[in-house]
Image (cartoon, rainbow, N blue to C red; front, top):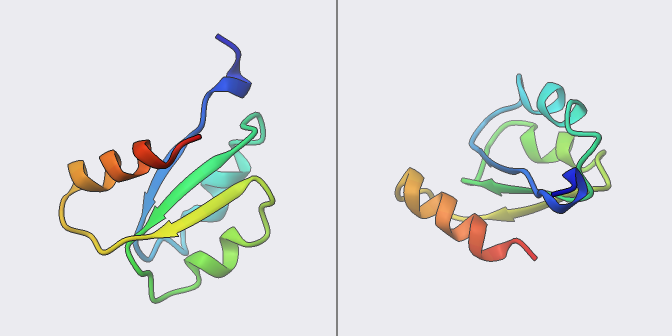
Amino acid sequence: MNLADITPLILTYNEEENIDRTLSKLTWASQILIIDSYSTDRTLEITQSYSKVRVLQRQFDSFADQCNFGLSQIK
């Protein structure tokens, strides 16, 4: 398996302090999917500077449901 075949899935809620550092480490990924639980800080603004990032918003109900939703959205 090639790293380009892997899509990192990141769950966020108010991760302004961490998201830039996290995304900067994923330069090898051809696509990164973020499932955001309607952050109220600068999380979404920061993600916009990364062209490989796709952000979907979904109300948080459980960690498992957020992960499963994200996995269903990976192309």
